[in-house]
Length: 206
Image (cartoon, rainbow, N blue to C red):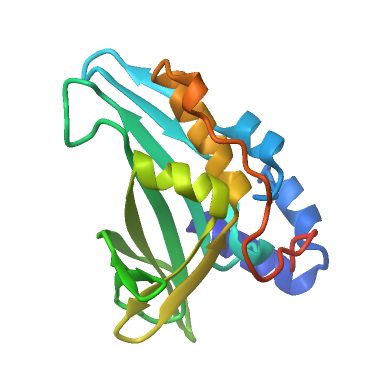
């Protein structure tokens, strides 16, 4: 959140969001670029817990550097049925006041939703910025489907909400890394499209 505050102040007196992102070492990855997402996805193992974690790159939704972000992560642990082959869309919503996000929906259906955190960020005489982090939990089978279709969803709250579109290419790259890490690369799904609806700008907005 400190970095976001710095960015906000800098953007207020400068121009291009892409240049500011580069200055602070923030990688701007298009979620429709399968190869870039795949290359940026990290796989790590913990010898103590026996878990392998797959973490996709953070995406600035609509390429707005100061708004909402998402990433998809997954876990592999054959000794822990609750964790094994679990996927989660990790969403951070940034607001000027609490939205009290609590439930995700897609196509009229409730999604398995976990409230992760609520934090106060930068404060000034006009108030404070706040962030709310929510996880949308998905099964391995569901992610295989999303690697072909993408996902449109809304996280509703008492005072606000977050709506997101995650393209098939992003899910496909994460799913491919996950299947490779679990030793079943033949189960990877190759996306046929990068979009599901709407549009994704080609350059970050300031």
